[in-house]
Length: 87
Image 1 (cartoon, rainbow, N blue to C red):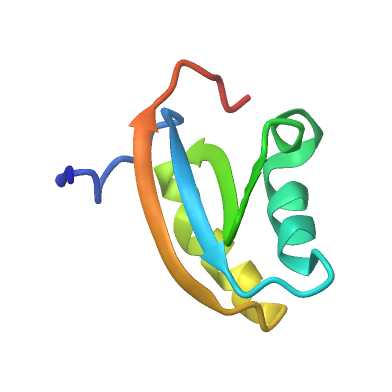
Image 2 (image 1 turned 135 degrees about the vertical axis):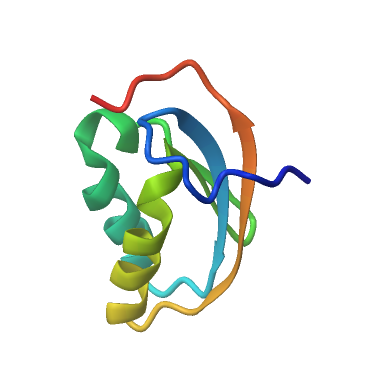
């Protein structure tokens, strides 16, 4: 587990695993809308959630959007840094 990225306001991209209580793909819709058309094509559907690539600074906003849609969030795990570009 890595630490020390709380103040990472860069556009560096990381893989994140979102384990969520999905219902009729509402959570997928929220994630797709947030990352945009280009990045939504790269969302990986896993057994209990999704792997999404985004900057670490986007996580609080993503959590807020999922919560507004009453999507339960069981865990968010940061994975490896990628070479993708946010914009």
